[in-house]
Length: 295
Ligand SMILES: O=C(O)CCC(=O)C(=O)O
Image (cartoon, rainbow, N blue to C red; front, top):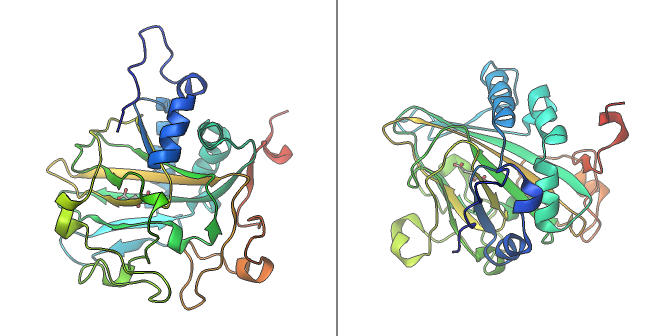
C-alpha cells in the first residue's frame, strides 16, 4: 500500500487540510485504512493523556477485561466522552472531526463512539481480529475511526489491518467472553459467516501495520478486518479510537439477541432500517453546535 509522501521541510506537519489530499481520500476508499505520520499535534496527545488519567482514576465507563485474570489481560473501555470532559473536549474541539470530514467527504459529522485499548505492562494479549461494523447498528460508507497510540510501538504491536476487506465479506463478530478459548466464536451466530482464524494463518492474508510514534495516526474504516498487536518488552500500548460518521450513514438493524457495541438502548425503537442515523446517542460535531461555540 503506498505510504503518504514525505512532507517537505517547509510544510507544517500538522496542516491536515493540505495533507488529506484526493490521493489519501482515494486510498481510504480503496483500502479502508491510511497511515499518516505526525498528524495530531502534541497538545491533543496531552488532552488524551488527561482523559486517560481520569478513566484510570475510575471516573469512567465500565472497563472490560480481555483475558480476565490471565497473564495477557488488558482493558478496554468505550464511550468515555459521556463521562470524561477531557475526551469531550478532544472530540468537539480538536481537528479530528474536521480531518475525518475531509477524508470521507462529509461536511456534517456525528460522533459514534470512542474506545480506549489499555495494554499497560509487558505480555498483554492481542485484540482479536474482527470488523467493527457487525456490532454497529449502521450501514453506509462515510465513516472512519482515527486510531492513536500514546506510546511508540513496533509494527508487531501496532493496529493490524487487511486492506480492502471493507469491500468484501462481512463476518460475524467475535464473542468477547470467549476470546481466550476461541477468537472466532460468533457473537450473534445468526446470518453472517463466522470470522476466519486469521492469526492461525497469517501468511494467507495481506496484513499491514507500521512502526508508530505518538502523533502518527491511522484512519480505519470500521468494516476493515483488523486486530491489535500484543505488548512487547517495553510493555506500554495505550491507544484510543474515535469513530465518527457522515451524511450517508443510515440505521442498520442488528440481531436483537445481543447488544450492539456500545449498547445504545432505544435506537432500535426510534429508527427503522434506512433512516438517517440520528439519536441523542450520536451528537453532531460538525458544524459545531451552538452550545459548544466560544463567543
Ligand atoms: O488497538 C487495538 O488493540 C484494537 C483497536 C480496534 O479494534 C479498533 O480501533 O476498532
